[in-house]
Length: 227
Image (tube, rainbow, N blue to C red):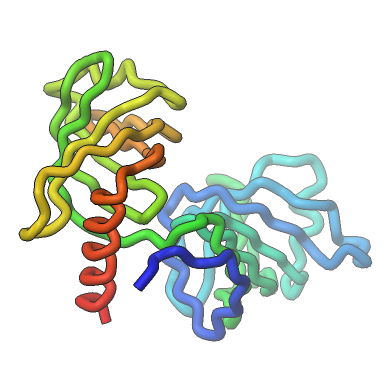
């Protein structure tokens, strides 16, 4: 079973918002035809109560607070787990201190558009990364036919912090109990450093057929076990 999936729009009729606190969201107040519409505003998710409300922190824009009327239509857009999400709700209320924040209604339906070309599977695979700065042990935490996300200890391996986007890197990993140790060349697409942990988004570059065969088998098995 192939893990390649087209970017198909879907409408979620019972959405569960699991975006982390601090996620960036785009907020539109009112409809484009309303006088309350001031375009999209950058907001930050400050908290939520599932199936009740989202709490959004707004920037201190002049005149914004006077437009925050209960019942005003809201359109909220955000990206999470490789998907673009958008829903329309309404403003419940707002507070001015300690920061300007609004309570937005929880979505009853949400439109979702996958942004990735391949479906990703959560996993825990030990990996060895080889780069021009040395070799580093880590863990692949999700993987697809097109690439993976790997996490490394940057406290005990500070040299790994020198790796930047667009650099080549080679991974060695075992894809299941019946697989041999596989090697695949990657290009670093993103680097995110948090305290003592460094996370890299990696794209596979011209993987060998043997690697693709083992990866397909691994992903198919993971999909069966998740059902």
